[in-house]
Image (cartoon, rainbow, N blue to C red; front, side, top):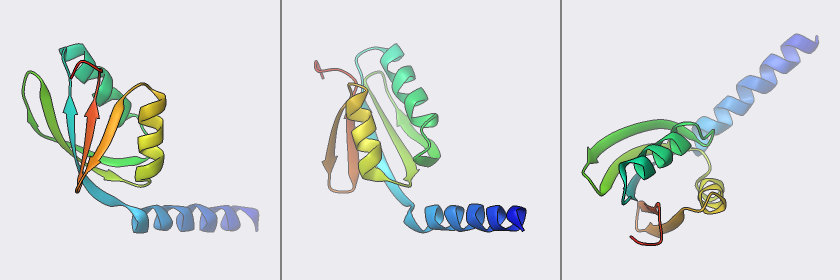
Length: 100
């Protein structure tokens, strides 16, 4: 029946997400605390991020650990929202402004 088919589809979709997840360190650079809040909210509300954990924060940087489902799509979305994004080894670097 339709409900069982939809349930199977939902389960398969979630299993695929789990298989493609990757744990990534992210360093966010910001000039103002409000920039950090905006970046944090963007990441927390993004459907490509499964888990979000703040490891360290200072007055200009934050080091976080996230589980990403689609890293390339996330980077694209960050750039579309005027964040400067770079990959450095296993770390994703996000600048909230061009002044950093």
